[in-house]
Image 1: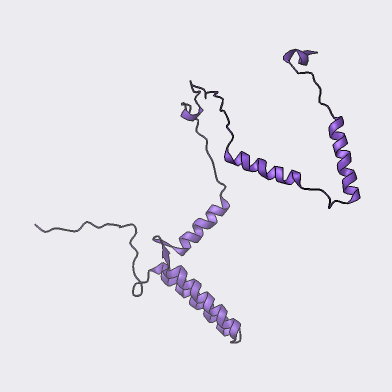
Image 2 (image 1 turned 135 degrees about the vertical axis):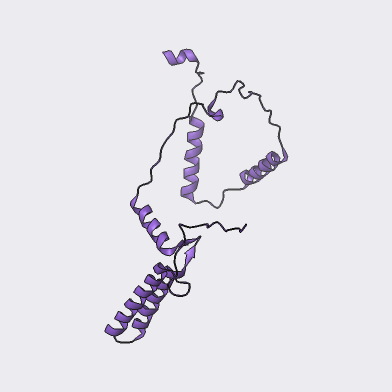
Length: 172
């Protein structure tokens, strides 16, 4: 009994016209060739004409032969243009279960008081501030000394209210 191979990719098969060129690839190259012929026959040959011809040749060969992830460049361009025209559509689907992170927790964080003990950094900060407090202010101008004197007077004249606020004080 003879074995026969089962054809695969029947729908993706494209016939070959010239060498390995499919009809679609041949059409892209033919249109590029026609555009190049028209440009060379109408424009005088110069640097700009050569650049335009090279650009058209590059584009036509890219559309004919270049494939990215098994998709031709014209398919990529078509997909891009469709994506530009279509608006993204977001659909919200309500879930019947509440996510775990939104569920109320049975235990609350503890309210422990943390006792702060003086550290070396506190001592260094106190030394630094004491050094600057001991420095004389002799290099100040008369206007600056007057301003500092007024600030000290304001500080000594200001006395915060001695009454302590309680919940009953709010109701008055």
